[in-house]
Length: 265
Image 1 (cartoon, rainbow, N blue to C red):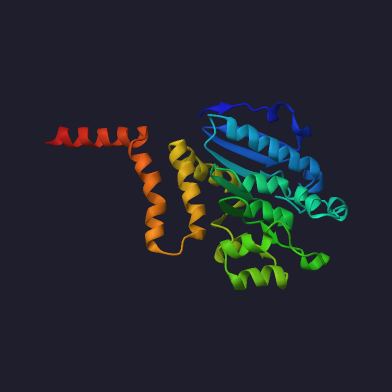
Image 2 (image 1 turned 180 degrees about the vertical axis):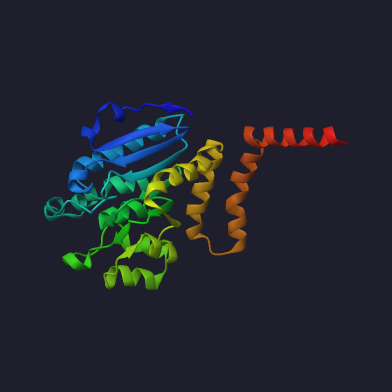
């Protein structure tokens, strides 16, 4: 196991997040537990800075995001929201999870406790959601008389379906970790005590792959939303697959397989 320190571990970002990197898996922990890790200007700035750092490092191949107990993220700072009187100001509320959504690295949300409103958006910004048994997914917008923002309805509809999105947003349904896994909002639900380890082990599989191939895979998958036929789907994968054929990982694996076959003949 290889552990490496990061700038944020030494106290930058006002302690709003902590970063830890072990065996190419970075763990971002939202670290404002007294306010249940709400999305504030300070937390957004910390997430953006942390993501910039992690993406610049050669020893990071995947990212896990979680929250310091007792919550994953309990939504946006309502005072910050109330102060937004322009669309540009509203966009600042979204800056943290949008930075996460834009990452070329594989990302996993390990949702421990409540993911509410903007906190749910933060989870939805990740490529995969893993839920602890105590997880609670709550859009909350209906209850506070606020229209969803940050692409919430699009993200929900993209990962689940129309009826689930309607139930969660329009009818204010709240689901726990087990139910989230049943409806496709989470990949799976695991015991709280195992959540972070399971997320990190899953992230390690992606982190162990060739960086450029993994990034290319993610980009191709995300681009599939615009593809409507088989021919375009094949064409979209031709270039990246051709490039990977000459990559060190594939070339070395092929050489090993050929050597094994030769040794048996």
